[in-house]
Length: 308
Image (cartoon, rainbow, N blue to C red; front, side, top):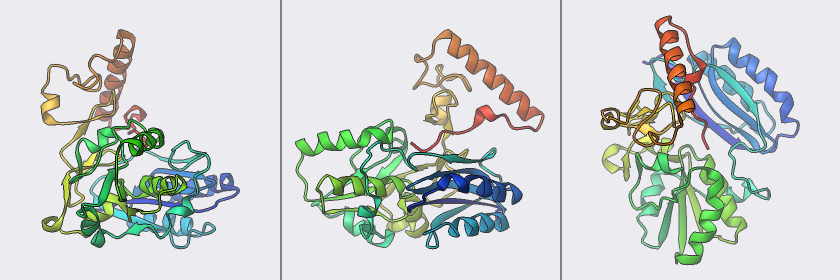
């Protein structure tokens, strides 16, 4: 059994005075050797943490003691080494940033489809299937027949959808994302736009992969995750992708064989995007990361991107 538990979690719940929750939560995590990131906002909490079983249980128990969080759910996967470098608790305006001020997350309640029901929903020819993730995530894996909004940030989703609905006909909508948080918020957004026949995948892609046998799965490819694993396969094991530390895009072995790949500095997707000053800074960061690794230390410049 792998010694590190990775727990992905979120909950939309009213947390007035959430600022006061930061310091005690951070201390519990540090005391129990837990790494990762947890976001706190008035609308709830969101994060991924990793560490030993006893530490994960301690942090989860602490979170479940927050007002309204007794029913907090999470997804677990297992690793031999911690995929995070440090523990952070951040205070935010939103736990996943859409930038629409009048979202009511409660409008997504009771709009869940379980992983066991999902295949029947998305194979209905009357259903429009939307992947609410960003383009770099969709590029390495998605469900059969899903529409890719080709966004670079979740903030772009509202405008994309408003434009899309003007040009296309549909009767039903089903949406999905990595762990459930973005499609839950986008479901509330669509209902606020007057669309009632909309559902989303409960627990997201990660719960689907955990629940549905590979032989019955409609998932193609790997799932991007926001830690040092970069991606996971259908068995939730670390996938085949690496990451370009210059642009944070997932990259393949073929990308790394390209003449436009310079470790830590550029990949085929961003080779022409950096000026000489930026390239020098990236070269220096890569040098410091390699020196730190040789000394058995962690260099904070290697921290992965946040879910956006």
